[in-house]
Figure 1: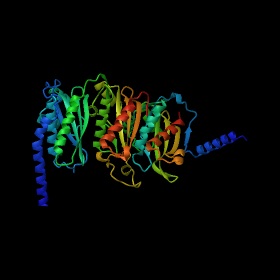
Figure 2: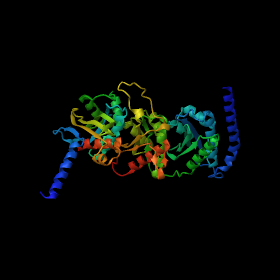
Figure 3: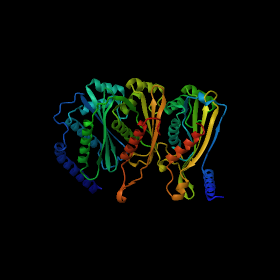
Figure 4: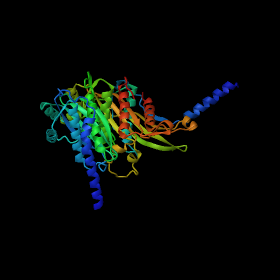
Length: 358
Length: 189
């Protein structure tokens, strides 16, 4: 036991030493998008980083260390791209004050506080820890308007002892992609609510929400109101985002001048999870599918008119998670995030077709 | 008898046989109700009698999409319907009484309310193969008096004549659900 502990200590010390040597080299190795660009006129950027999902028994033992590394890398990458990050202490104080715990909902007062403090943008980063990888999902949100300026995702593998370098690189790629996105969108804003999961855990729903925002931004020139901002406005106004009634719709129409609200439901088709073994089986109803083991699922989207409360479009897609057969018998398997992203993009494309599509 | 006539008779007999084997829809529609007065409707959460605990949650969006596809009615968002049910104290497995249908109709300003019950959802054996199947009942009640106007029970599975003849997997549960709902709604619109 003692020997094993010593061995673990030596391995981790070696990893830390390797990272300490390599990370400074990395800073100069990552291509700069605009290291000498002028500071962002939109003001400072508040970094909010959250961890979610299963896999807490993964290769990452020290979650606080991972958080610190993530915040440090995102901050450095932002500065590298010409944006001024808000100091971590200030950002954490704001989070504590407004009880921002998971980045799923931002109260309007929090955004107003940021805006009045000269912090024009919000960098929201979610880390989903798996057994062999970390999925990074990032969005840049305009604190003044609540619009999503950019959304992107990255993956970092946890194999080997140099995963910290992979993670640092992934953070930098993510921020560079977000910074390079063109936020200028002239179309009428669309308002996708956070994906409502049925049989999935909250992390899976968050990944699906991220994919939905990415699909919306990729598809059209429409401005996209961030789901976390929409959720915050609804909760602050006393409406339930899962059961959106007329007052809730009017609230969103008044706050963001949106004519439609997009509601998406993600329902599991996992037979092991969904089928009860007996009629009187009293298993825990909270048992859900974790994001790493995403089984077949269905995504259903409906577009609700904020003026009438009527559904104007409804469509659905079905997604299997069976590995696809490629050329010469190669088996091509996808990560859960890719599966969800593929289904979400198909769903979004279907919903944008004219008429009441299926 | 000319050979061509014989072929025609054989084809007609084959088609009649196939039609007889096809799973169908049993439905009831009141003829003394003028459906042209119906403009807005709501779909309440479906009941689930199957072993799959998410069957009702999966079938309802499919029903909603197929209902919109008919372009016959305006549909109130299920979120607003759910909120109204909560306000009226109607639980997820409540069988609606005529008085509750009237109250829900007033709350949502709709002329009809659709309900549904999933009776079978999942795989079943058909001719030695596992196929996806769905059996469900759908109803429509008008909100003036709470009277049931339309009721349809539909049963469908993923097998087909061509699949049996040439082999192949069952149609997916999603496709089976869509076809079943489509067939049921065809008896109304």
